[in-house]
Length: 474
Image 1 (cartoon, helix red, strand yellow):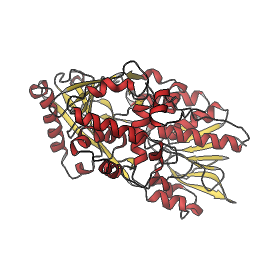
Image 2 (cartoon, rainbow, N blue to C red):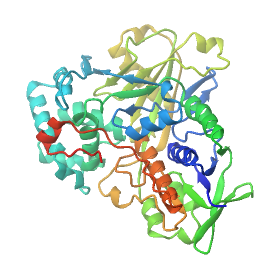
Image 3 (cartoon, helix red, strand yellow):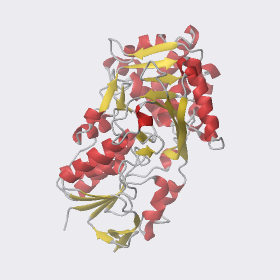
Image 4 (cartoon, helix red, strand yellow):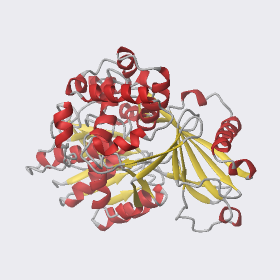
C-alpha cells in the first residue's frame, strides 16, 4: 500500500508535486475541483469571439530556476519564448529599450538603466545608490519594515517611486511599496536584476495556459501513471489515529492513500484540513494572510494597433500590454479571425472593484491611443475586464510569520502553494518550489533522500564583491 499519494489541487504547486512524485515511481491521484488544471494559470473561452484567452498574462523570469526546470521536465518548455529585450514607455511616450549587454551583473544592465530617458541623471544616480544599499544582505531579514518606509528613510522622491520602484514591484508582486516588506522588494531587484546576467530575462507563453497545463501537462501526467481527476471537488480530508487516511469528495466518494498534499490557496485550507486541525495555529495564521487583486483588460480591435509584441507602461493605469496570437482556437469564428487581440494587465487593482467595466476599458483604450495613435482610428469590437480578487497573497510586513512550512502538523500531510514558506513571494516560481519541497518531504518519509529543489542562478563575482552577496548555489 505504501506509495499512494493524493494531491488536492491542480495549480502549479500540485502539478509540480505530482510530476516529481510520479518521476520517483509513486502512485499519484490528482484531484481538481475545476474542469481544467492550472489553477490561477488558466484560460477561459470568450463566447463573443470564441477564443481561448488567458485569465491573466503569466510571466516567468530567468531567475525562476525551479519553474524553468519544471516546464522542461514535463515537456512544455517549447511553449515559452525567452525575451531578451523589453520596451518601457515613459509618461511622455518616451520609448526606452531595456536589454542586457556584455559584462558581469550588475553591469550587464547599466546601459538599459541609462536609456530610461524619463528619469533625470540625478534620479538615476540616486536610484543606483539605493539599489546598492538594498542589495546589502542585512535587508534580507528585515521583515517588519515596509518598503515604503525604507524608501522614505532614503529620501526617494515621489517621481522615482512612481516611475521606477512601483513600476517593477507592482508588476512583480501586485502591491505598492506601502504593502510590501523590504525582503520581498529586495528579492525582486537583487535576484531578478542585480545578481546574474540572465535573471531578468522574461519568459512568455506562446500558447493559452489551458493548452499548456490543461492539455499538455494532463497528458504528460497520465502517461507517467498519474490518475488525474477534474471536477473532483474535495469536501474534507479524513483522519484516523492522528493521520490523514482519505479524501472525501463532494460526491460522497472516499479515496484512501498513504500520503497527502493539500495544494490549495491559503483561504481554502480551513475548509479542507481534517477537523482536528481547524483551530491549529497553522490554520489560524493562514486565515490572516491578505490577498492582492490582479485585473486584465482584454481588447479586440479591428486592426493592429501595436508595433511591439509587449510593452511596460510607466505612470499609467495599465502597467503592461501584450499582443499575441492564440494557438488554441479549435473553431474560430469569422469575427475572431479578423480581430487583433491585446491584453493589458493592471496589478494591485484594489481601486477597480467599484468601477464599471466599460469605464475601465475606456480608460485603458484612451491610454493606448496616447501612446499608439493607430489605436484612435481602430474600432474596438469587443472589450472585457477580468479580475482575480485573490490572485496572490499580499507580501506585507510580517506575512512571513504567517506562512507555514510544507510539513503540516500531521506527519503524512504536506501543504503546498506559493503562500507557504518558499523563500519567494507569490510567484509561479514560489508555487513550483513549494510542490518540490512537499514532494521532498514525502520521499524522505519513505526513506528516500531526494533533493528536488533546483539551485538558484550563480551570483556574479562582481555582485558578490560590490554588495557582499553570497553565491546561493550549494
